[in-house]
Length: 137
Length: 98
Image (cartoon, rainbow over all chains, first blue to last red; front, side, top):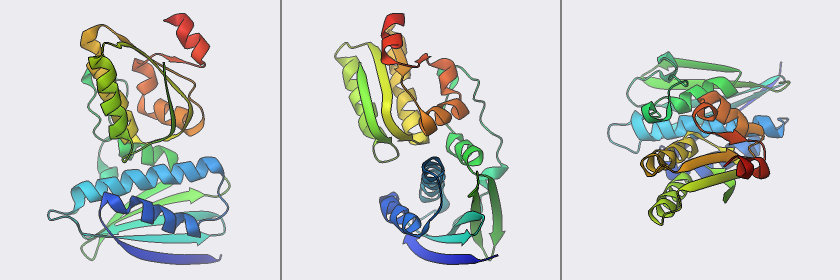
């Protein structure tokens, strides 16, 4: 299996979304239009979460790593913020009526559903979120 | 009848919320939102729609969505937003149901 890895460090600031977007999509290849939108969605939700919550004194840094393999693409989001596993939380109740809705957790629910795999690990005092997109799906 | 196009994301959703608040304060309480030309929506976009829908409630007005396709439709379905807001396939159907 042949994989190409690229990574770059950005400031963990929402104003960097466009630069991160350009970096990722200049490297990605072989995804359908629908899957590209899925990647955009997962990226936005994860990056906004990190920029909003990871650092007690923002902005910190966020490392974006792209691992492009024959069958799949993985994106890794690495930050040195407070330990937090967003995938350990329960999904929000999406059957609630309008008035009872506060929208906590919706972004992460979307990430879970549109990506083929999601992973979290804490290593060397860093949060590592990895999402996987299979190219065939 | 309002048409939104392009992207409703972290950067653009606040504009929609602001515009929606203005329509309501001007007395436009029956809103049909045509999403046919919307390509992308994130949870920030959903939150702005929720905020406008909640402001409409005490006015007794209505908020109807139509025309959603592709990933936009998928996001509405995953989030359950299509269960508490009326959704129609086309603008014509939405207007005839009002």
